[in-house]
Length: 147
Image (tube, rainbow, N blue to C red):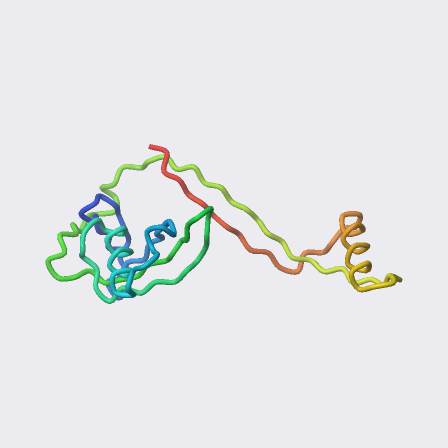
């Protein structure tokens, strides 16, 4: 498995196609007024600290406060300054990891109400009084480097 250290010190695993993927948080004030090309350049620079990525693509994957989180993908440019390193040579560092499990279950029942809004209110009031079999779940993982 190939690993590279970017000019800004961040370390990434290379995909089979030689590309990297990273998450980037941007505040909306940084995004407003940018052209598509300058926006892609900003994302790439946040990943690597320099213009070392080509064929940059991105997808919006989340939001926070007044910001947005993007997944950024790109290929290293020739002479990028990214240093190829051995994964085993990296020191282990401490991370704080928060995992949120979101489960989805369904319970169907009949109630009598005068309006649809009343029926929704009644169902909402009653929802916490029952057990639900979980049909599927998803996990949201957040990782923060501590040291």
